[in-house]
Image 1 (tube, one colour):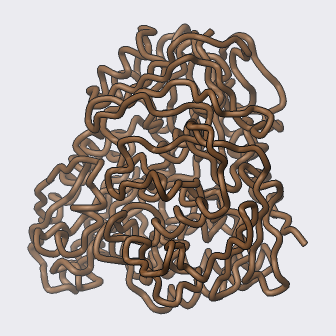
Image 2 (cartoon, rainbow, N blue to C red):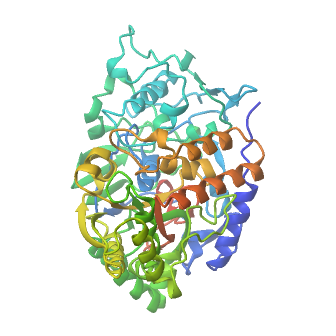
Image 3 (cartoon, rainbow, N blue to C red):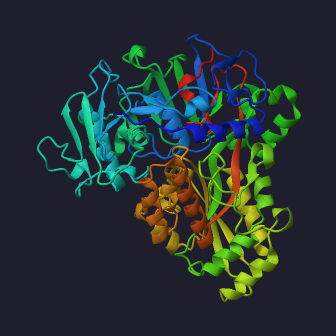
Length: 582
């Protein structure tokens, strides 16, 4: 029988969050012809079915990758719907409807065995690639095989590596099986059937099935690490050209059949992405109407936020989007003196969270001060504050100095804070942290790295972190889906840490790993949520992370953009596969 995804608790939490932001918490079935502030949270703004025109998109940085086997940025998972179809996806629509999983390539959600270790999907008939050739189940399997190769494709989650019964299989490029496709954990008995065999039960596999890793890749067209230059499309748009660091242009895919795809639109004739625009310049272009969308979706910068909040004509085109996203600083226990828990706790107490919140735009365009890991939207969330940061959240100097005494560094020490070059708010938050830590004698140097390689080469590369003394690592994390496993596992499970491409930037606790295993085999929603709350408390007690912001994103949608709404399934981004400009 097909698993029914329980979303009641998530929907209730979302309704509360939307109400707090001025939304109504409705199902997202309404539409709005005229923009008003926060209208995109609960309705489709400027609905239209007209085709034509060019959707102009900006990106301050570049993708980690546009290859479905090698991407983990949230905006990339949203944008990839324009040219790639996975087995499942989140239902299009604003409000709580956007949290529901629906079939995409598959005819239905997964059929599972009684022990939740075998999952079967049947593909819809008639789906074609951009060249007119049919999509086969073997092509889905092939991209799953590719995503297992963390040397070629270091970015992206490790869910398939962790849960498939791979029996040592690591890469299709090392596969000696005649005709390849030798991963026995995934069967394709015919062109339309794909069966996954897990080494341990997991009742949420339909969430794995929505990952870009199940976007089909025809083996004959695969060029390994160079496949990103022209990903073969199954969506409404196909690559015209891609120049990394400069531009990505998409045009209509004439072999996309809307009768097989009720979840996407094909309205603009062309989608044009300019890469490497200064973030403040991008905001100015959005407000002037010469740019239609900021693909990164992390919200406008401080200068634009001030203009929007003070100008009703701008504010009516904005949404303060609640998210299942946390901004935090990861403390690397492999870098001395953070191998001592008291030195880590000194940072917890000394951090000026109020200043860091201001750096991100304050309560409306930045978010609320965070005191622990789990977000209000995640079922099981418990409101804890293990390291109270003093009056006004400006840091507790006395407690920080006490912890420094206990770690043998009474006069403080020196370390490095990493941040991403293209993210001014992240850099400003690092500066605010730097100033707060100085009050207790902790001196820091801020080092900036390109966001496209941040996890592959720098913050997510343990050898680099240790060699270069990156003790404090800037991080922003959104749930892969709004449930404890989809939120916490990839940032706190020590078993997902590899040589490069990590999103767990240093949590190594076997007790935490054991709690994760218990949660994945707990059927009751309430009991499972309580276990995730215990994971949260344990990681905080170990002082591996300094959470400082429960993120809200002040998003701007120019009035000429059609079909704009915020998708909670897509972590508070606008749904790019629905947009038009006519």
